[in-house]
Image (cartoon, rainbow, N blue to C red; front, side):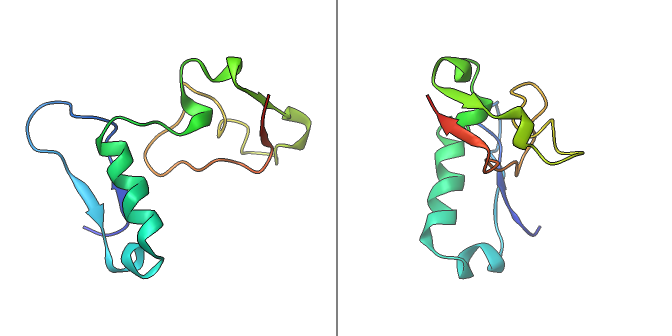
Length: 87
């Protein structure tokens, strides 16, 4: 297994967390980030209540990346686009 990823929260059975060598080389923040997912924390832009707290500047989203800030379309490894700002 390689890469840096984890499921959000416990979904039954064994929890898989990938912390490959590249994750560890990038510093302790990556490990903490994935462990926060294990505990049930979501990326801010993918939370169900995100529109109460952030504003997406859709006119600044790059073509073919429009689904990145979409709360329903995100998967493991999604990252916060630079066009998301706090309200």
